[in-house]
Length: 377
Image 1 (cartoon, rainbow, N blue to C red):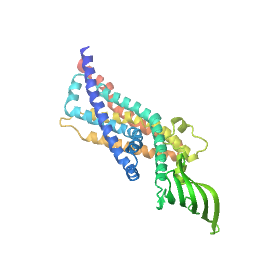
Image 2: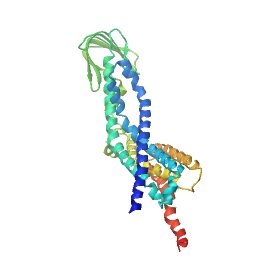
Image 3: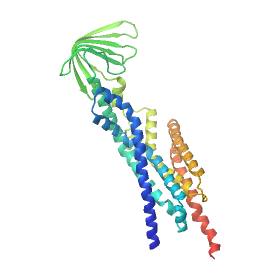
Image 4: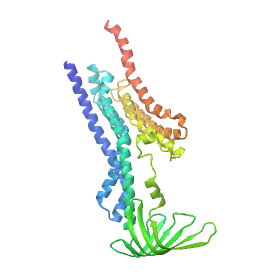
């Protein structure tokens, strides 16, 4: 009974160190990635005078995807570091002298890995698609609002890469006077639109100008002649064609798992393959937490004890995990072109962990008892 309590205290001791380190390392790396990724939004926020809350909300929606990506790697780093420190401080030697097996020593790390795996499943299946969907919709809304606010009287304003707008005057109710629009969204036949007046409104599809009493001049790509069309009323969407299409086109990153496994008929064969690969990636990515953890445990618990510690096995474990991450990316791209090799995604994920688990636990559970029997007799 006393021995069981000692083991429980040791489990809690190692588990507390692993949990605290995992939270701190994951938070630090997420903050670093968040800072690097948020730099592309700072210019928009500062130059256009938007509220800092817009920046916080926009970048905060990216955090779940950051956590889901780096959690398997941070779990491996924490397990490797904590157990290497325990070995360096001779704490693992004392635990082994107390009769603890490798499976018992690895139990806290496996518990942390199991919890991290469940968190990754929740993120990949539910939270990340919802946050990316909200991020894309909110980013498109902000860009449309910026395009509407950018129109200044007497200035040629590039609303997008293909649309430039000039207005002579602008009222407080977003009424416009003296409007000129250069529309190059059709590269083979750009158009110039002139109007006496108009009304600017912001819709879900982008900023829209209701033009009155104007003309549209467009170069015919086939004949090379200039076509002139006059109108009393006309509606022009100022958003870029790529932006408007991206707002309505489904994306695999923010689709649900059911949608990925059952894509709609409107998708092409290439897009359906990408959606299927994304579905299997979401199902296999959390399992890498356990595989990487077992590799870290094998590097620290496996092998013979060395008085001055060994750096070869930890460095080898880091190299193996790095290769596995690169192999996972390469396999996803390769399988996208050859769907018959879809099981390779699961093999790359599961085989390293199974091999590490067999190498770590099987020898001590099967070989050592046979070697100890003659000594006991």
